[in-house]
Amino acid sequence: VYMKKLEEEPDSYDSKFTTLTRGINLNVHDWILEKLDKSFSILEVGCGTGSLARKMALKGNRVIAIDKNFKMINYAMQNYPANLKGDNLLYQIGTLSNMTVKEQSQDIIVSTFMLSELKPFEQQIFLRNAWRALKPDGRLIIAAEFPPSGFWKFHFNLKRWWFKKKLRKLKLEGTHINDYFLHFTNSIGFRILSENEWVHGSIRTIDLQKVKLNDDNEPGFYKPEPRNFKGIKSQFRIFRCLFTGQIDRVPIEPGIYRSRNPDRESPIIVTANYEYTYIKVMRDLRNVDAWVLCIDSNGINVWCAARGNDFGNKQLLNAIEATGIEQIANTKTLILPQLSAGGVSIPQLPKKFPYKIKFGPVWSNRLKEFLENSPSKKPDSMKLAKFTLKHRIRAGITHITFLFRKIFLFPLLGLSILLLALNQANTLFWVGELTLWIILVNFLISIFFPLSSFTRKFVLKALFYGLMNLFIFSLLIWIIHYSIIYVLLQSVIIFWLSFFSTMSFSGYSMATSPREIQLEYPLFKRINIILIVIVIIFLGLNIFKFLKFY
Image 1 (cartoon, rainbow, N blue to C red):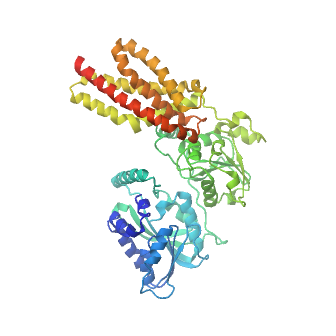
Image 2 (cartoon, rainbow, N blue to C red):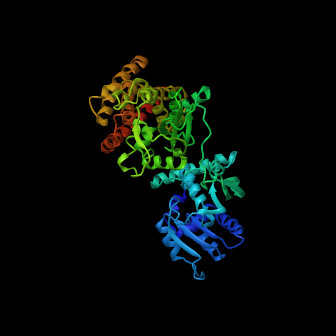
Image 3 (cartoon, one colour):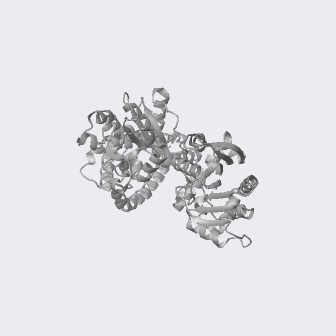
């Protein structure tokens, strides 16, 4: 993960990366160099500062080293070895989709610590392009970070989580775990010759050999195993998404899936690789023969992915190139979710894009009807996303779990510990009440959210629900405690909970736009800071009250 930061600093990249890997990157270089027992034509993809490319060239190999990072290539060229003669080493700007070499021209392709920058479809595209660039029986040597097994997987994930936090602060994109890479190799046309590993399998080197799969001399395509979408296990996976969906990305392997028994003329349904979405779509397509193309939306639902650049033209193009959907279906129309229209821009697709895009219904339970009737113009019920009570309750549950995990859980635990430290165990009911207020406030907001349709301004919505809940909960607290002082002490806390939760929950509404939220956020932030200060004061007054009267 931290490599993303290091790549911005070519001058110190090698030393810092060696420190980060505790010298294992140098062991990887030695392992690869041992495999070069004679002179080869070698393409290195993702060469970085050129340290390995220089070593391979100095050993007598003809090396073309490419990287998409201009800073890295520039640094590598500035450090071209003085004792290297001839044209044995050439640095170029290049990418996995533009390898700058002819087909069947390379003996070996080498790539070290690049795979984690690629998503599953990009890895498949890389493997297919590498297969084409290699000579018959040519080799692909990979070094990459893989998840270890057993206890060490927990340690690995904990370390990645820590580095991801650092990257978020630096506003840099993280890398990806190579969960699926070894699934792809056989199907695309590679077999493993040898491999080695370090640090309990978290860093591995793999020597792969190109294998001819068919007479047309083309690489194959990978298709994921069918996933069950029926029964109690699938229902528990839905519950998992429901309770953690706003925080945890819950991806399935992207690729082509089958609904029943599709043939070459069956429709192609495009959706996200979010597990909840996949299960719902497959269930709603019952008794329909169709191809279901799950693009790599990063394990996020369609609407959020489209708004966050995870379901757009790039992801769609990668899915078509990686899966070879054109090879198995004659259909020239892709049916995309209506809610993906915010991410997929038809005018910006390539001129030779082989498909016509048609946006289907907004909810997948209308897919069957849409396919049967093929309306030239969709009715409003298929186009407009209504935030119904059912959807609001589901969103409310997900939102409450998000609030507890991200914001309230540790403060509530800290408050409990403080009360215990002050010998106020008998006042822990107050923490329980606060927990209950958080849950009830958010349920009331989700249930009565349409009442605020008189305005699109989220700060006004937040003030409206703040006042509404202030009245409701003041009455409830009075009935329970029969104390005007207690009501007053809780009132500011209730108002802030409602104000903050409304602004947060508004992101679930189909009527929201990221631009509107961004425009209002500075005002919301100022009001929220003032309210937080007042809430802290009132929390202190509550504790003082307990110390005095209990």
